[in-house]
Image 1 (cartoon, one colour):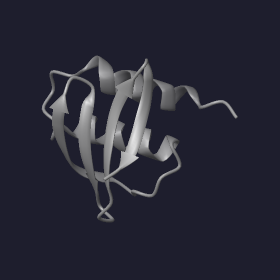
Image 2 (cartoon, one colour):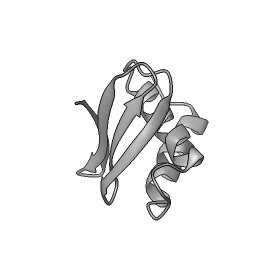
Image 3 (cartoon, rainbow, N blue to C red):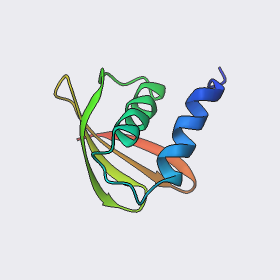
Length: 80
């Protein structure tokens, strides 16, 4: 199954704009899309804390927390 083009754009945008504050609505929307692409429950990211370059801890509306980061040129999402 191939990801849709808008989803790939969301991932690219997330990591192309690391200088934006993690509370920026665009960053929250991109994190929401990345988590959804990984098939994890979230609904909507309401808060994000930037831990480093391409490394965020996202808090979802439903209470789930995920670390979204890159490793070996892959986007990883880990439940916290």
